[in-house]
Image 1 (cartoon, protein in one colour):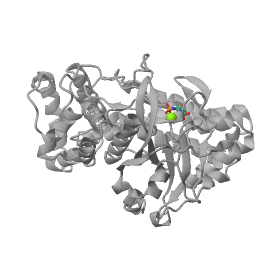
Image 2 (cartoon, rainbow, N blue to C red):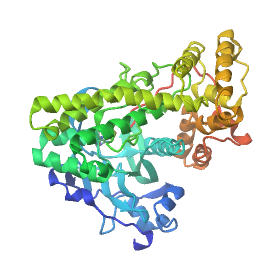
Image 3 (cartoon, helix red, strand yellow):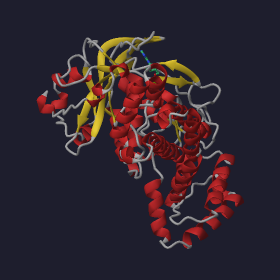
Image 4 (cartoon, protein in one colour):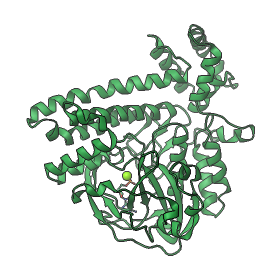
Length: 484
Ligand code: AMP
Ligand code: MG
C-alpha cells in the first residue's frame, strides 16, 4: 500500500483507552469500488491509480488494512431527540489520521464496516443508497463552501443488508478534520475520570484550537471557539437552506464541520417550519429551529467542561454561562453577514436586517423556491411569478436597488458578488433520489453527472438547467428516511 502514499499518524490512540475500543475486522464477501473522489484524493496527495487496486479496495472495505492503520471504534454518548444515551461508533471504523504534505491532519473512517463493541442491537452495516446520499450531499456542501466532512470512496460489499427489505451493502470512506463530537465530551464527562476528560479537552485543543493553549482559561476559550465555529456553521446552513434533520449532540462536531448526512435535505419552498425527516414528527429539527437547537447542544457541551473551567462549581457555571450567552449574538452576526452577501450588500447599514427580513416574509408568503429566488435576484432576471409581480415585492426591490446604488462598489460588482454567493444549483431532492436509484440498478452515469454539476454550484451550463429546477409538484412534501 506504500504507493498510495497514506501517511498515517494516529494521535487518537494516545488518549486514555476509555475513549475507544479496538475492533477486529469484519471482512466482506466481494468488495467493489463504485465511486472514487479523485479531486479529494489529489488534495490528500494520494495516487488515484493506486486507489483503484485490489489492495486499496480491500482497505476501503475494511478487509485488509495497512499495518500503520488504526482499528478503532470511538466511544461517545449523546442526546438523541433530547434523551441521553450511550452510543459510540456502532458501524464505523477509524483507520487512522492521514497527514498531508501541507500538514493537514484528517481522520479516515469507514462507515458501514461491521459490528463494533458499540453496535448495541445494530448490524454495523450500511446500505448503498444512504452511503451515496452522504457522498453526494457532503461533496455538494463542500463545493458550496460549507465546512463539512468529505467522502473519498464508496464500495459495495457484495453482501445484503436488511432494512425492511434486502438492500445492497456498502461502505463509505469518510474524511473529517476529526470525529470528536459534543457527544465525545458527554461520554467523557459522564463515564470517565476527570483526568480522562481533561486529556480529551487538551487533545482537542491541540488538534483544533491550538492558539487557546496560552489563554488564561483554555477550557473556557475552547467553549468559546466551539460556540463561534458552530454559530458560523449553522448560519451558513440557514443561508443556503440546508436542513440537517438529526441535530443530536453526537452529530455535532467540535471542529465545526457538518457531519452525519442522514435524513438531511435542502429546502425548496421557503418555510421555516420545513421538516424532511420521517422520524422527526415533532419538528424538533425543523429549519427554523436549527439555531436554537445548536444553542441547546452547546449548553450540553458547556456542562461537560464545567469541572475543567473552575474547581468551584458555581464559578464554573457563571463563567460558562457568560460565554454561552454569546452564541445567539455570534449566530445573528454570521447569519446577517451571510444574508447581506446574498443581497450584494457589502457595507453594513442599520436598515439591512429589516430589508432581509422583509424579503424572507414575502418569500414565505408567496411560497417561492428559496435557492432560485436569490439566484433570480443575483442574475437580475425575474421569472414570471406572483412574488415578482406583486406590488409589495416591487416596493421592496426599489429600496434594495437604491441601497445597492448607494454603495462604494458598483451595482454590477454587487451582482457579481451575489452570483458567487447564491448557488444556481443545490442537490435537489428528486435529483439525488434519481441518481441513487440509477446507481442501485448499476447505472452510475446519473450520479456522475449530478456530482459534476454540483461541483460548481455557482455556475450552471446551459445544458444543465434541469438541475436547478425544483420538483414539479413543489408542494408535495418530500420525506427523507433515517434510512441507515
Ligand atoms: P446516526 O443516526 O447515524 O448518527 O447513528 C446514531 C448511533 O447509532 C451511532 O452510535 C451509530 O454508530 C449507531 N448506528 C447507526 N446505525 C447502526 C447500525 N446499522 N449498526 C450499529 N450501530 C448503528
Ligand atoms: Mg451520528
